[in-house]
Image 1 (cartoon, one colour):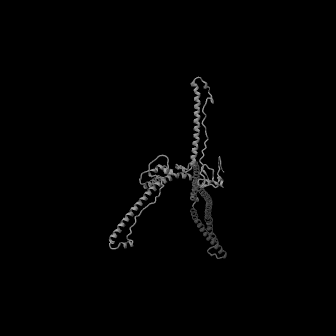
Image 2 (cartoon, rainbow, N blue to C red):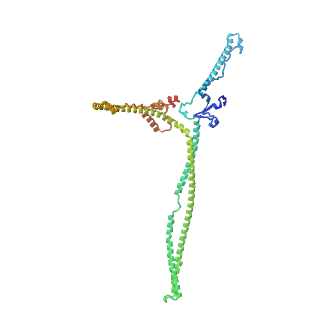
Image 3 (spheres, rainbow, N blue to C red):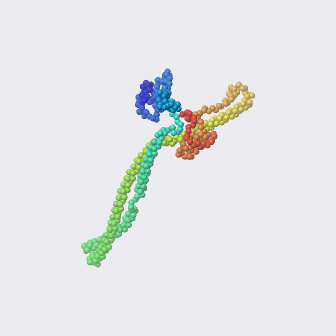
Length: 471
C-alpha cells in the first residue's frame, strides 16, 4: 500500500512505478534524493500489474459528489405564522407566499451548490487529462521566478559596478604613481658635478705650479748650504750675499705662494663638501626611489589579484544572468525559427524547380540521342542485317530518366513571409541592431516566392496554429 497525505492507494510495493518528468524514481531511494515533493514537478504513479497483456481494464472513474438534497415542501404546520388565522384572505395569503418564496430560494441554493461541486469535479478531471501545453513564448521559462531573478541580478550588478568603480580609482592611482616614478629624477644633474670637478682642476694645476716653485727654491737653498759646508763657495759669492738673496724668496713664500695654496685648499674643501652633500642627496633619492618601487610592486600584485577576483566574479555573474539571457534570446530565436521555416519552404521550391529543369534537360538530351541513333539505322541499316546490329548492341535505346525527389520538410509550419510580423514582430528582437533585423527579413523575403513585405501587426505574439495543434 502506498500512502500519500490524505490518500491511500492499494498498490503493492513491487508493482509501484513512479515517474517524474523523464526520470524513473528508484523505490529504494527517498523522495528527498530527487528534491521532491515540489510544486513545480508532478509525480505519476503507475501500477505495473496493469501493464501486462492479460491485466483487466481499469475501473471506471468514480465521481463522488456530496449529495445536497432539495428542501422539504413548506407547510403551515411546520412553520406557523401569526397571519395564518387572519380573517382577510389577502393577509392570510401573505405567509403562504413567504413560505413558497423561501422554499424556492432554498431549492435554488441546493441546485447552485450541486452545480458548483460538479463544475469543480469537471475542472479536476480536466486537469488530470490536461498535458503540458505552451501557448506563448513566456511558457518557455518560469515566469514566477523571473521577477526575483531580475531583482537579484540588478542588486548583484550594482554591487559589482561599485566594486569596479573603486577598482578604477585604485588603478588610476597606481598609474599616476607609476608615471610619477618614471618621471622622477635627482634634484641636480651629475654633469654639473662633473663640470665643477673639472673647473677645480685648474686649482690643482696652480697648486702643482706653486709646488714646483717651492721645490726649486728648496733645491737652491740646499745647494747653498751644501756649498758652504764643503767650502766650495766661489770667491765672488760670499755667504752674506747668498743669505740676502734668499730673503725675497722667503717673502714670496710667506706672502704669495702659501696664501694662494691655502686659498686653493679651501676651494677644494668646499668642492669636497659639495660632493659629499650631493652624494647624500643621491643616497636619499635612491632610498626613496626603491621604497616607491617596492610600494608600486606591491600595488601591482594587489591589482593583479583583484583583477583575477573580478574575472571570477564576472564568470559567476554570467552564470547568474544566464536565465535572463535566455529570456532575452527567446524572442530573436523564435523569430529566427519562423524565418527559417519561410526560407526552407522557399528553398524547397527552388530545389524542386531545379529538379524539374534537370528532368527537362535530360529529356531533351535523350531525344537528341534517339534521333541520332535513328539516323544511324537509316544510314547503315540497309547494309548490315538487323540481327548483327542487335548482337553488337546497337539496337538499344536510352531509357527515359525519371527525376524523383523524395518529399522532405513535410512538417514545416504553414506560414509565409507575410505571417512573420504577425507571429514574431520586430519588438521581440529587443536591443538587436536594425541592420540585423532587416538583413534577416531580406534573406527570408528573397527566398520567398511572393516577395511581399512583412505587415505591421500590433498585439501579443501568437504561435502558428499548426504548432499549437501539435503541442
